[in-house]
Length: 243
View 1 (cartoon, rainbow, N blue to C red):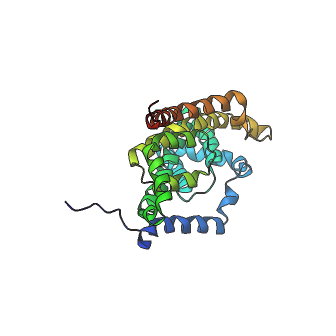
View 2: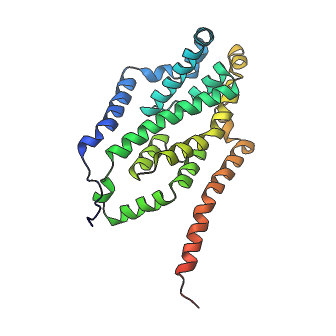
View 3: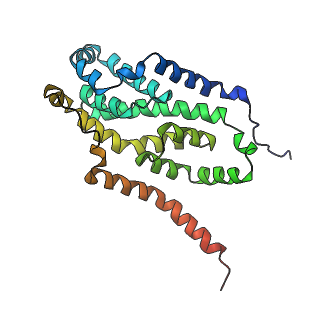
């Protein structure tokens, strides 16, 4: 029976990641980030709100595609886009559309990384291969925790998941579930932007850091890691020599 060999690394596989990187650079060089501010949203709120009302389903699709595109090229805009979703579509629909857009964009980065970085671990030595195998074994729980408490940049988590060869369905499920609390919080805040804009105020960007919001999210992250901790504890007990 032929021995299964790991796929070899190829620079041609990096083309999808390269295209996303080029898109990010072009966006920044063209001044796109200057439009992703609360001040811009505030100045154009009436115009944009009119577009949403007149556009109907097209406005929803446009919002989702813009969110997905910004996420795919790794432009930090999640908070503003989710606030805008709550402002334009209400807290629940806004959170739903934001989750769809963010998940689509993140999945695009993940797939590009999965294709481009495939076989790279085999070239990096046994220690890195063990780390990759450890992440892949508990990939869903690790990713869910990282989405709930984003201690690492969003784009970096996408690359790590792709490098580890995580299954697509597990990646999508963990990404979607992990982003739900933050999306609901920011979309709910965004639904009240009209009052803030009318009063010339800014949203509370650090609302999610309040203890009554952050502590339950951290609790969910700990719950996501409990199966991994238990599995490692059981494994350690089995490896102990019999007394």
